[in-house]
Length: 321
Image 1 (cartoon, rainbow, N blue to C red):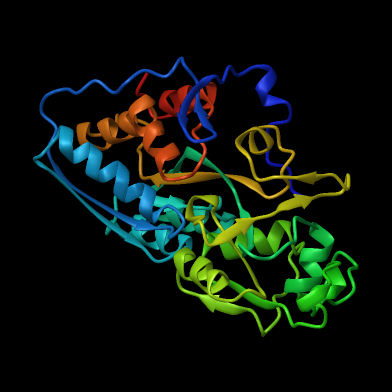
Image 2: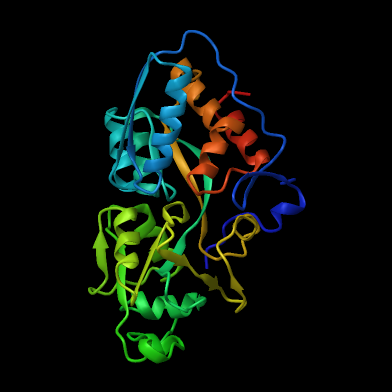
């Protein structure tokens, strides 16, 4: 199983000031400080998972710099690399890391690799209808529900009683909603939850995360997956257990500590020549995103802010510290 990359991170990160609901922000974060001479146009092409958050960042950034125009297009993570390579986008949000072939294609054109910037943390949620009494599934059970390959060795699961539900759920078919293949969420869920097995043909593929959540909200016998930021009152994000068999809720603490087994970073890729600094527009945008101002927006959108020490690493990577 793929590890998220930070075990016991909370032992080194202080998290206390409450930002939104149960999401907290490290008190070392400071507000963004504006500067002069920032104007121009940015185009962002990529992740649907990050679509709402990119829009929120852009709107609040433009309040500071009214002369800036930012266009957001979120049709899936796989659309980001070709847009960056072609130069039709300056920002490439992705809910998964770029694949080696995508990096190679970029490097073949520019002579250097694209710069990966971690901007937020997501607990990729498994949603059921709010009225569903289910509280937890194992990764193996999820594989049995969604995959025809069942690489984990799970038995095929097609009805709700096979995961322990009784009453009106007994014998009822599980209706599945998921993302399409352009989605980084589709790829990450396939890699981590299904161990790269194939999805069942009966999974209803949706063009966006909100459509997945709406599908689950409108069908009491449905299940689906998307970023935790798309959670609504009509669905429930259940706990998931990994190899240790311990059910872990998709919370900030569990995501930070790697206990929730489908946690991940969310990224924005950028074309940065290593020998030259970022232009002021892109530089200030990333400064905004990775300060307290931008990370409060992250919390507002339902995702988890970047741990402070990691945000500092990303600013250093961009030459912005």
